[in-house]
View 1 (cartoon, one colour):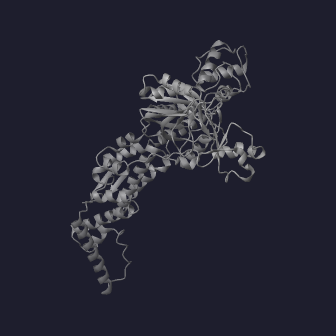
View 2 (cartoon, one colour):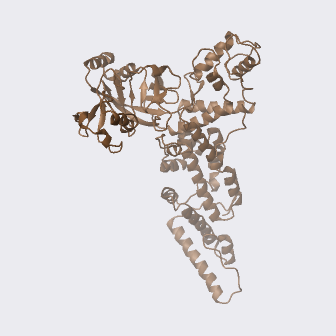
View 3 (cartoon, one colour):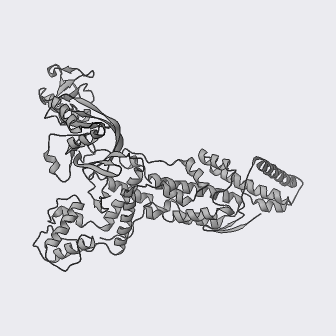
Length: 581
């Protein structure tokens, strides 16, 4: 029986529930064949010339049944066959989706009279795509609504049924694992998007509210919630005109006064660092506010508004919103089990943390790879399985070619700290090697520096085996830790306090981690210490993140990765509100 259904998508016509068990499908096929045969026979008998019939999959089956005076039930079976055939065609390239509809005997999820609640829930969820930092145009809610209004046949309804299901699965995948493929944005982002289990999601969709399913697939980390809140606040700020005029001075310090101090004062008030006040003088209250701002942006907290501080202070609300939208996408890329205990290295923040059950157990400042793309530290996750106390340093081939081979060709006795090692691990006399006979590609030896006080890896290195030869380690060169932008290494991460880092990692497996570490170090022997329980290590890159109190922190995009990610998000359809300072 035909029904007219009013739904969130519009008015739907001819939307019965096309169950299609094998017998019904066989009857429909036979009826369809009989109908086509009768039409053909009528033509042979010299019937009046008429337009040729439409293809079997798309003609108006009800009209055909009426014209031939078919029994009403047969006409309904023809209509159902049109729906089933359309669904079958539309899912032909997706075995999972095709099997899903076959298993449920082609009962619709979205387009039947009993599906109004499911449609409404999905419309509500889809209308919030922008709130999650996703591209609304990718899911085309207006287009779906228009398609429901335009349905004229069971074939069109079948095609629309599959279109909505595909839309739902795409939206679910994006909510769960992000819109972008990380590796296609930057070659140093060694991640793949978390994938949804399509079969499991479809099975849930038969029983559960679509909105609840979508919410369950999103990241559940507190950080994701805080980033969503930051997005809302920043969009409100942009709508209100931003944070006011920028500070045009090159530098301001306590005791200064005038119009630029007023601009500084007003911007600090607008950003929440200073209570409302009328002073035109750079007084103690402004100095304290500047120090708070500096700490939130990893700047030297000296209370002086120098060039770096003013550059950060003058960043507009739209600049910060871009960073937050990128951070939301990055958080979706990290929608994985991170481990009750894990190590979190934020390359953009130059910090390494040990996290236990969501709490920071230890944190140390760090040095990361240089800005040159060849020496940038990549982003990836692996498991730390051991540490090596009194490590040697086997120089990676790329560093040998970049830093040492040319010098050895000029002077075979250069870089005397290194042993020359064959492919079998044997130490040979460097006098027996003609370095000038080799290029970096043909050089068959390795350079090795034995353990010792001058070894670049210091007292300990922390190993999470990976294809990129990246690890965490100590260093005897301490002066670079005092710099603000600590991008100085060849790619590995240097820790400012590696001993305490080692003690905390060893604590679960010994009553005296300090003593164990000290004894091994004093021996001078290169010693591998396995971790009883491997610890996940996540090398991430966050220019926008929250601190323990929930206040947003922002860092410079030292590698330019976030700028590239945002450009890709814009191309994908992520929307920004009107721009302001």
